[in-house]
Image (tube, rainbow, N blue to C red; front, side, top):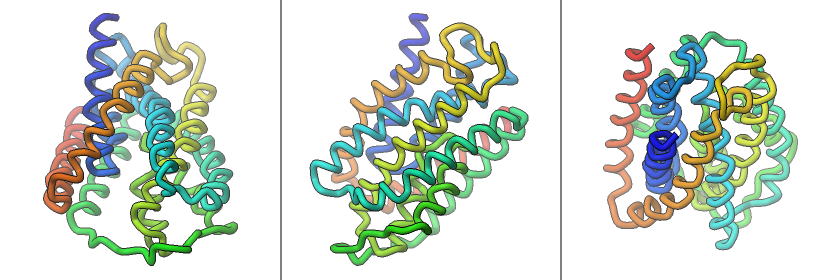
Length: 265
C-alpha cells in the first residue's frame, strides 16, 4: 500500500495542475494513467478501464467542489443554471454509468481514446467564442435535457463534463469565467451520480479489497486530495503563460494519451 499511496497523490497533483492550468483534460489524463497503473496493483486487467473511469469520477467530486467553492466566492457560479442542469446531470450520470458497466473493457478503452482525440482537435482547432457577459443566465427544460446528455457521456469517458458544459454555456452567451465556474459546480453532480452508479451497478466482487464496486478507494482518495491541493498552482501558472500555446501543446499531449490507450489495448 505504501507504493499505492505514493503514486496516486502524484498522479492527482499532475491532474490538478492540468485542470487548473487549462480547465479541461484532467479527467482524461487520470483515466489513461489509472488504466495503465491499476493492473500493476492487483486490479484485474479486464476490469481496469471500468475501475479507472469510476475512480476518476469519484475523485472529481472533491476536486470540482473545491473549484466551485473558489468560483462561488468570486460570484462566478450561475446557481439558477446549475439548478436547472443538476437533475439532468444526475440522471445522465446514473444512466451512463449503468451502460458503461455493461460495455466490454476494450470497447470502453476505444471510446475514451476517441474522446481524447476529439478533445485534442477542439483544443487545437477550435476558435474561442466570447459570451455576452453580464445578465445571461441560461435556464429551462432545454438545459435539463442538455444535462442528461452531458452527464451520460461524462460517465462513459470518466470526466467532469467541463469540455462540454463550458462551450454550451458560452454558446448561450455566458461569459467564459462564469461558464467555467458554473461547470465546476455541475461537475460535482456528475461525479456523484456517476461514481455511485459505478459502485452500485458493478457485479459482486468486481475488484479486490479496498474497493466499492468499481471505485478503487486508494486511487479515488489519493488523487482527489492531491488534485485539490495542486489545482491552485495550475491556476497560478495559467495567469503567467500564453493560453493559446498551452492549449496546442496540451492538444498534442491528449493525442499521445489517446494513442497510448489504443496501443495499450
